[in-house]
Amino acid sequence: MKVALVQLTSSNDPSANLQKVETFIREAHAGGAEFVLTPETTNIISSNRKQQAEVLNTEGDDPSLARLRELASELDIWLLIGSLGIKTGDTDGRFANRSFLISPAGEIQARYDKIHMFDVDLGNGEVYRESSAYRPGTKATLAKTDIGNIGMTICYDMRFSTLYRQLAQAGAEILTAPAAFTVPTGRAHWETLLRARAIENGCFVLAPAQVGTHDCGGITKRKTYGHSLIISPWGEVLADGGETEGVTFADLDLNDVKKARAKIPSLQHDREFEPPEA
Image (cartoon, rainbow, N blue to C red; front, side, top):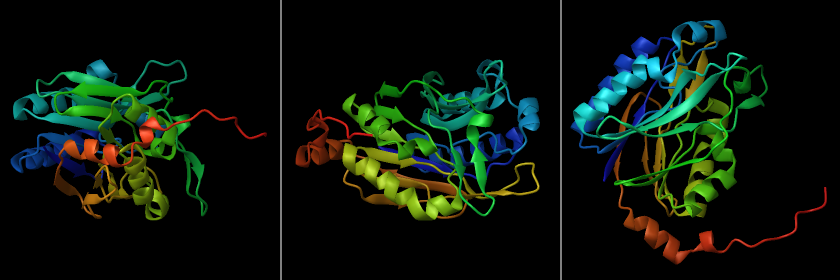
């Protein structure tokens, strides 16, 4: 199966982002991809919560979701929308950071709301409080499809290995990790974390990423790391999207999952143990 990762520099304008991502998805399809993946926050990167509230929509009314469902059906492809900012109707006004798996019929096969919120202080004034705008999800998602069993995650989730292990032990063969990784953490941790999640679970990892400098509606522009990665169950980097917008391809053979797990069947070797004293 040929897969393609779309690497974007999304802005705070959902309409412009949609036009751009549609162009790249068509390019991926023209290159033979059967499964195409876009990054986290495909529809918006914004530092202005008021502006987000003005331009975001509920799932049922979201034009980006509707158009991308149509496109998946038109092109007869599986499409992972890495995530969209979606209004939830929550009383505190917070949104969902929601990933969608779309079938070739244009149907929503699975949804996943990001569980782990990126609330960090990286130093030099680079502070993120994702939980102030987005409410965390509460449920892991495994989608069983005719192209494989797909465990869905988003960005900061990759630092929480238990989530990935539970997905793999439930049957995941492919783990998706769309992201908008910061430059400092990307340089230090991005590839290492993704390769670890692939190796310890014997899964393919598909990680489409945001890249570059984003017009996010604030004085300080946000920068993301890029380097969308496709990683084998043995931990090999099969493709790297570099530091520009575009499409990255690789061929996957799910038999490689069986081979890796036969060599090192660690998913079957968990043992109960007493936790350390606090």
